[in-house]
View 1: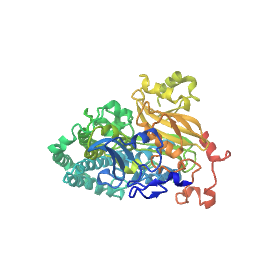
View 2 (view 1 turned 180 degrees about the horizontal axis):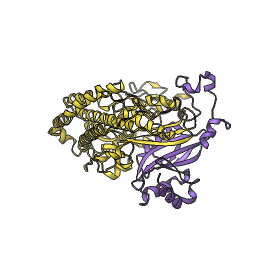
View 3 (view 1 turned 120 degrees about the vertical axis):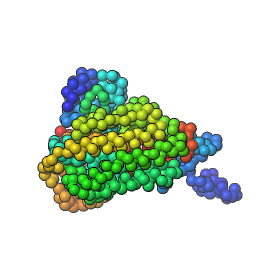
View 4 (view 1 turned 45 degrees about the vertical axis):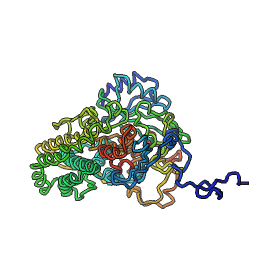
Amino acid sequence: MKTDTRHASADDPRVFLDEQVGIFEQIPPYPPQTEREAEFYTLRDGEMFINIGPHHPSTHGVLRVIMKIDGENVVDLDPVLGYLHRGVEKLCENADFHHTIAYMDPLEYVASLFCEWPAVMAYEKLLDVEVPRRAEYVRVLTGELNRISSHALAMGFHALDLGGLTPILYSFIERDEIVELLASITGQRMLFNYYRIGGVNGDLNHDFMSRLGTWMSRAATHIEANTGLLNENEIFVRRNRGLGAMDSQTALRMCWTGPNLRATGVPFDIRRAHPYSVYPELDFDVPTRSEGDALARYLIRIDEIKQSLRIIDQCLHEMPDGPITAKLPRLLRPRPGRAFASVEGPRGEYAIYAVSDGTDQPFRFRIHDPSFLHLQSFNLLMEGRLIADWMAINASLDPIMGGVDK
Amino acid sequence: MDRALARRLEARFGTMLAGRARQRHDETEIRIAASDVPEVLRALHDEPEFGFELLADLAGVDTGEVMQVVYHLWSATSPDWLRVIADGLPREAPRAPSVTFLWKGAEWLEREAFDMFGITFEGNRDLRRIFMPPDYTSFPLRKDFYLADDAARSPGAGVRHMERTHEPTNTPDDERLRRVRA
């Protein structure tokens, strides 16, 4: 009965098989589920698919991108996520309020304080806790240090993805010193787990303060010298100028935030647009650029490093004395309610929406990550570009896959 | 708290709101029916007196009884976050209109809510799974999806027998869910 449905073998036309077996497996191996998927996976004449990732050094983690190419030109692309999905939201909904903070760090493994921050802020809103002023200053100080280390690394990796091997080494000099600084108060080099509900875990110590003073005295000149490696590199500048340009209206429609949005000319910085912590008392600018291309996204990070240095300087001068944590019971049971907290991280807006039902575990714990939304715009940025341009565009967006995949 | 925003919202949307606008800390919250989402969000986005041009977050929520879609919006006209809750989606077949006509970037956020809760967003051109594999059939963040082991249990909840953790919590008399509804 099944003879009608047999297929000729690709190897030998005299042989018939029950199932169609091609030289290549069908992509995707199931019928398309949406119109977009059907459109993407339909090849026209001369087009083919190429797969980048999930294990590719320029994907900054385990991002997989399927590209539809025509020769060297990219026609369309489809990012495939989920290779790093751990279900952090579900884990947090089954964990104690204090435990969830430790789950936050690996989401944002380059600047992990910025994922802890909205979580503790959301809990403080649920609990109506007032954070001591010294704790707020310590948070801002450590946060801005972490922002500098993240931006320094982003700049280094941007060059590395374009084949420049030297700048990353200089980036790591600054990053290593900052990481050591933070390790002297948090005890960790990478996943700090430092912020606590109502404060921070440990006070500033002598080791931290003396090393920070030494670092601050030379940081500005060091960063100036390091950026000279790239800003005056003609290959780097010409390759990035005009690449992956985005206009401000489209960026807002694509829900961009952070440096990538400010590089298109929108002065949206949550530290100013919706102030939190002690940022209203601090004096700093929100740098913007109008070009919106990969070079602007790189340059705006340098401007932000300079502003972060200003903030750190003010924090050190205005740091009040006092306690570093609010007095809270060990077992927290916030009354039922909802809280949304959002901070300006090095990549954009990190936000937490926490719902409490009166028990010691969050009922709903929603993590918002900016890189997730930046990756979505590859189609727009890559229009008519070459495959190799994807590396530069991806590096300029500076995604962190830990937060994208949750 | 931006009292003026609450008054403006109540004056503009009137009967579309379920109850009054609630406010706490720096958040203003309104509840609407899922069918009103396009009209309300378009008004919030387009009308200059509101000007909520930035979608800060889109989240699905399973309360155990109903599904919700929660939008957080930002505007230069108000110092508050605006939370719009599209309430009362049936758990059996949750459907909500897509907001991709306002924010194209909501496409992946809605894909995520679909992947985790099974909420169907009408008008989203690419509603397929994003984190879980395409042949996966469950919706992991629903409240009737249990973790396989007890490892993540809170010490405050006490030691529970394995069978206890697999008991459904969405029974109508469940104390925990009653408090969420309040």
